[in-house]
Length: 329
Image 1 (spheres, helix red, strand yellow):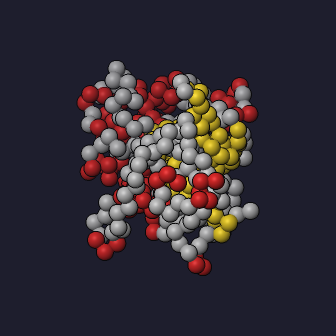
Image 2 (cartoon, one colour; image 1 turned 90 degrees about the vertical axis):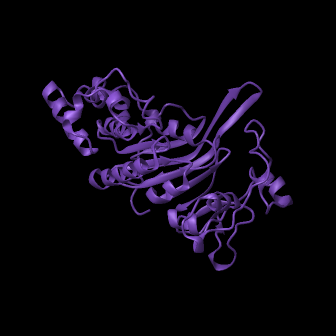
Image 3 (tube, one colour; image 1 turned 180 degrees about the vertical axis):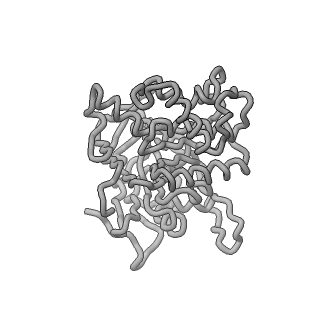
């Protein structure tokens, strides 16, 4: 990228002590997020997506590695600097029912962040005017401010959640499965809303989802995680059309497609995901990979890169010849 990334993560690691040992939830994770960009984060349950999101929100402190936000390490901040920083990264939650307070009106829900960040809008008149603006921005009526949560549908509730996330004028919004609890037709409306808001406000998204068709629709770049590692990353087109890692190819083959001519042959992975308490030696994916050889057992896979942002960790990438990724020293 030509300009400095808005968000830069390098070699991030995090372990949790549980009964039976330690879980390495993140192991040397690195990524970048540009201004106004949507980064899709995909992988099976337990791969580390939510743990990574919690670090981006500073809800967890890493064991090792660095996070740079606009060139600053947020974990080095304290006092007022840390307080001011926290408004710059906000979150839209998966469940629009449990993540909103049913005892509040819509206006109170949207205005709730200002109870902490009091200096943004000092008077009740300013706050009420901004609530109406935010409701209009997410496709609700300004008069909805006085309605209670039970009067809204699931899609409308998620719009309220988005309005609340935008109340502090953030630079980055972490979207954790923001449409998975919604009907299919409503999903499209919310996704289109997020895209419109990004064009209008220039906000960046980290978009976590199990639904690959959704990620393909919204993301500029994609990061694929497996057992705490990023196994492939690149532009959405590169990752979906020319996956290099066998795990990525298996995920893409499982994505439904209406175009029979472009549908891939289904790759069915054998076996269960290994326990994160005792991940396989060498390549963590080798126990489920049809291309695994002896080197996959004894050596961690090298990082391969095409020099244009498409990278994978694999001993046996899927595309040979001049288009193949090259080993990074």
